[in-house]
Image (cartoon, rainbow over all chains, first blue to last red; front, side, top):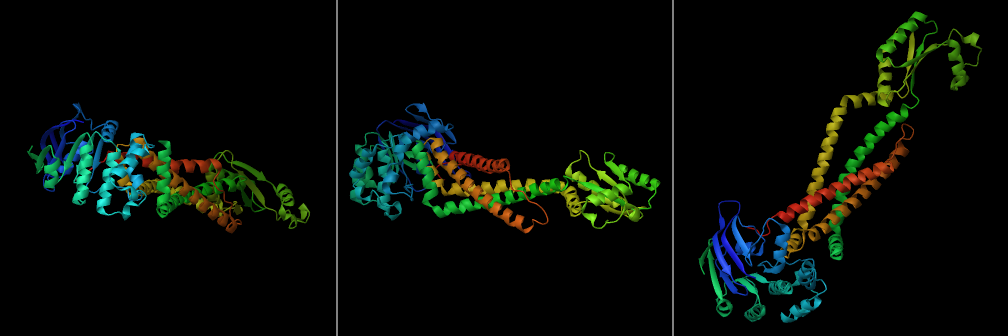
Length: 214
Length: 296
């Protein structure tokens, strides 16, 4: 999936501008790292790219087609093609690991594609967590479940906000290797220099809502 | 997808049974207030209706009352309402009437022996007049004629209803305002209740939106849940009302007769309560789905 942002501004209520004149083009299958301090605007930027937040002004082009933020059907179709891994994981606490991971398949209309879930559980080495309740998992395990849920979706674009923040270095590398194998566009926010050095094709720095360096 | 929607709906209900029960009970309490007031108003009119089915006022006059006095009294009654039908009963007719009635024992004498003691009567009948107006007119007749020359007594059936009917007439606009305020409060209560219920599901709704679920798949399980809990609450409230009705019927059967809701009224209330929740849930889910997905 190719993403292009043209003159994107995002203002929340109050004087703070979260994004100021953002212009980026991320090519199909490109692996991009986004860096920046907390509050720099990374999450807002991800929200706009994923179709979760409408920009105050500007255009988001997906494969050269403008994303229509007004229509729910068009947004949900875009969201089904984008997998987002959040810092807070956004897992459903009243369900077990398997029930959380299988959710995107219902959105895609393929609830019986259980083999995909098995494959992802195997790849992340979390098969034994399958029937565990989310509330009983550690932070790292929750992060792996969130990653597994995104991989099951087989999205055209993965957006990951600090996906390895709660993982040890070995697991981080395994997750990043999985992402690398994932033959599509990838946008990752990370502060981990080692990961950036190893896996980044391009790094974009964002500060106070502005792109500082591409 | 229907399977998934049903699965989500049943999960919403069963995962936190105490939450579901407390929401159902809150619906039940809200509906009970509404049903109780409806029941009260229905029975107020039902009492007026049943009490005035065979309704007539008897103006009892002294035996020595003159024809001109009777003429005056009739004119006084006609002044109150010209459409009233008046029948003057002479002493012989009254004697016969008493013989046919329960007072047979009291007049176990020949007419000639008691002629001087039997009163003359004017029977006032109400033709094509609403039950409430009948009571009010009877009350007016009594107030105006009582104590006038030649009149011994003005007998009206169910005299306690006079005050009730007057109270209703004096305060009917207040009652309408009260009812409007009650319906508005019920609307607000349901709105707050559903907002609270949907807030419980907000994380799940947002996740479903992030994953690209279609709008209907997100909304229908929530609409079904709200409607189901509302229906259960309604049945609970109606059952409670029925038991109150049984208790009251037993307790006050000697004073007045009560009537429970007919099937039509039951279904009307059911439709009103459940469709209100259906409408509000649809509205609120639409609002939640349109909210921003990422916090600032």
